[in-house]
Amino acid sequence: MKGYKVAIVGATGMVGQEFAKVLEQRNFPIESIKLLASDRSAGKKLFFSHKEIVVEETTPESFKGVDIALFSAGGEASRYFSPIAAQSGAVVIDNSSAFRMDPKVPLVVPEINPEDIKKHKGIIANPNCLTIQTVVALYPLHKVNPIKRIVVTTFQSVSGTGTAAIDELTLQSKQMLNGKAVVPHVYPHQIAFNVLPEIDVFLDNDYTKEEWKMVEETRKIMHANDIAISATCVRVPVFIGHSEAVSVEFSKAMSPDEARRIMAQAPGVKLLDDPTISLYPQPWSAAGTDEVFVGRIRRDSSHDNGLVMWVVADNIRKGAALNAVQIAETVVNEGWLHTGGRK
Ligand SMILES: NC(=O)c1ccc[n+]([C@@H]2O[C@H](COP(=O)([O-])OP(=O)(O)OC[C@H]3O[C@@H](n4cnc5c(N)ncnc54)[C@H](OP(=O)(O)O)[C@@H]3O)[C@@H](O)[C@H]2O)c1
Image (cartoon, rainbow, N blue to C red):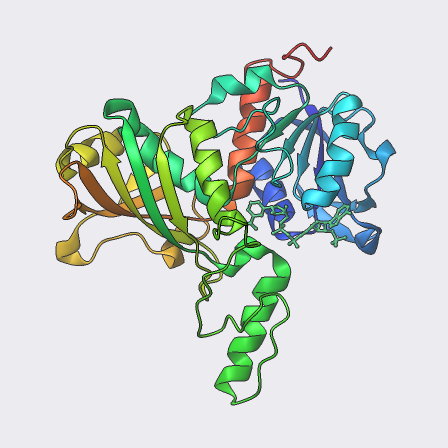
C-alpha cells in the first residue's frame, strides 16, 4: 500500500500527541512523519512508531512535499499556516475553529457526511468535540424521523482546553485538599470542586462561542439549517470525556425502544442503557475509547414528540484526533487528495 508524507502541527500538545497515537493504532499508511510545534518545542524529541523524532518549529517551508497535514495548534497558527500548507499541495485537516463555518471548507464527521470531503480545496475542518459526539448520536435518528429542535446542557472536561488546564485542575485539587489558597490562571474562576457555565468567549447574543459553535456546526454537518438548537455549555472538574444531557423534538413521536433499535445499528455509537443495573455512559469509562456512548433514553415528559438522552465521548479521541484521522483515511481510501478542482 502507498504510504503518505504526514505532518502533525501542534505535535507536542494534547490533541497532537493523540493524533500520533491514533495514526499508529490504526496503521495509517505513513511514508514519513514530521512533528511540528512552535519555536518553544523545537529540538524536543518525541517517539513515533518506536523511532525518536525531533520536533521542528513550524515555518512556511515545513509543508514542502507533505501529503496530509493534521493541525491542532490553535486558531491563530491554523489561520496562518493552513493556507500555506494547502498551497504547497498538502490536504490540511484542521482541528481549530478557524475555517469550520467557511462555506468553501467541508466540516466533516465521517459517519455522517463523508461525501463533503470530495469538495475540499486543500482544507477540511474537524468539528468541535461536542458537536461531533452530538451528531454521531442524533443523525441516525434524524434520518428516520427528522429532528425539529435540540436543547442540550453539557458537562465538559478540562482536557478540552489543552495541557495547561489538566495541570491547573491537578494543582488546584491538591491545593484545595491541603487547605491552601487557589489562584486561577486558565479559567476565570477555580475549576477544582466547581463548575463554570462559561466555555469560550461570550457573544452579543448572550450565548458563549462554544454554545454557538454547537448550533452552527450541527446544522452544517447534518445539512439541516432549520433545526432549532439551544445549548448551555458547562466546564466541570473532569479530566477527560465530555457528557451532555440532550432533549430532542422529532417531527413525529419516537419511542425510546425505537431509538435504541436505531442506535444499536448506528456507526460509532454504543448503547449503555439499563437503569436497573445503573448502566449508563460515564466520562471516566469513556476516556481512551473510540465510541460515542448513549444511555438514559426516555420520553420527554414535556413534549409528545420528544426524547431525552445522555451522551458521552472521549473529547480527545472521537472529539478530535480520531475524527481527524478518520477524515484522513477517507481522503486516501477514496482517492480524494486532489479533488475539489484545486489542481
Ligand atoms: N483538547 C480538545 O478536546 C480539543 C478538541 C478539539 C479541538 N481542539 C483544538 O486543537 C487545538 C489544540 O488543542 P490542544 O488541546 O492540543 O492544546 P495544547 O495541549 O495546549 O497544545 C497546543 C499545541 O499547539 C502548538 N502551538 C502553539 N502555537 C503554535 C504556533 N504558533 N505554531 C505551531 N505550533 C503551535 C503547541 O506547541 P508548543 O509545545 O511549542 O507550545 C502545542 O503543540 C486547539 O485549536 C483546540 O481548539 C482541542
